[in-house]
Amino acid sequence: MTLYDLVAPAIEARCEPRYRIARIRAADPLGADAILAAVPAMNRDADVPALTVALRTLLPDHDRAASLGVVESLAAVRDLGLLLGSLKRHGVEPLAAVPEALPVLVELGRRTDMVPRDTVHHYTTWNPLGDRQRMYTGERMEAHLQNAVRMVFPALVAALGTCTELAGLEPYDPRFAEVLDRTGQHVQAMVDSIDFTVAQVTPEFFARELRPYFEEIDVGGRDYLGPAAAQVPLWLVDLTLWQSDRSSPEYDAFLDESVRYSLPSWRAFHAAHRGSTSAVSKLSAAISWESTPLLPQGLAASAVSLARVLRILKTFRARHIGLARKAYSDELRLYEAGSGGAPIELLRSVLDLTRDNETLVRQANVRVPLSAPTPAVPVPEPVAVAAAAPLHEERYRA
Picture 1 (tube, rainbow, N blue to C red):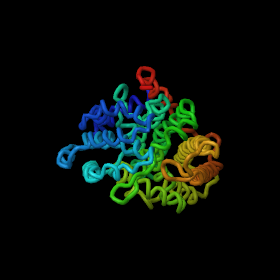
Picture 2: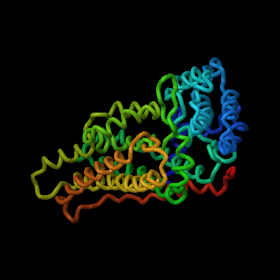
Picture 3: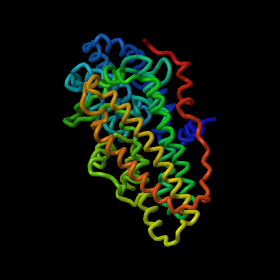
Picture 4: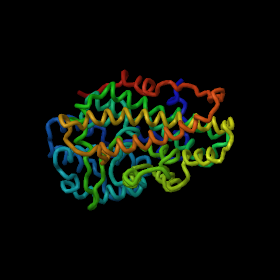
């Protein structure tokens, strides 16, 4: 049994409707299955008239949109979003072509308490599997990329819980190290995901075939980014570990823009913990008060565990920037900025910040005696393997 198997059923059981993944995937409130199955062919032919007709056909009237529950509204935005991104990819501003979609998207955004267009969660986590899977291209690599993002959602939900717990603890508390160890297991899913992406999706496919579908669209005079992987909120973990008080103006500005694409409860988490004392700062303050040559055992364990989680974050970011550099190289790139709106330089900056904080904590360990116990952390089974397994059973439209 993997971490994914343990976590996914638990989040389904919560009261949060946005965690009811199976129900959202199963929902088809607009009767969109047949039309969306034809979208890859429309995109291959750059058939803008057909895409426009499809959007008009699926569009519910305002009263119908206002009658949908949260689960059905999320599914409706998911399905309309595939057509919004497809039209924009072919050079058409969707709401200029179908202006009657504006009040519907605004209403659906109000009902879901999210931005009035699809996000990475609509495109991946809430996307059906198998024959009903919504895709722009229908290519196997697109499905792999969707699964690479999809597999981290349960781990991020679990990390949100452990980070909430961590925020209320101090480094002398034995639970501080324990909660950090559990957080590290969840964050490992991000590393597994990026490794799976590197193995299954070429930079050429992403840069040339898929990236154009993630362009921003105008909704009521405001631009909204497409379902970018950058919207996967690793900042939920950053915020508690170091970002809340050890960040940079550039990263803060990026998060202020990115946080609006998150789930309501995740936005509330950001608002509650922004500007609070980070785990790195708590540990640094605690160590500074110690005058003995060796750190107390509990504080030493906290330092070891915090360094371990930061190292996992550093590993993910180093691999991510390597992938991004290939996709946005001079030979491949069609756009200067990433699909999340950030330049490659920002990725480098955040990697440096993560490394600096990891180094700070690691250097504190020079006071840790060689005999200090290292908390036993079970090595999590690779999430990528567990999440990728169903791919062999699914069928993809060519």
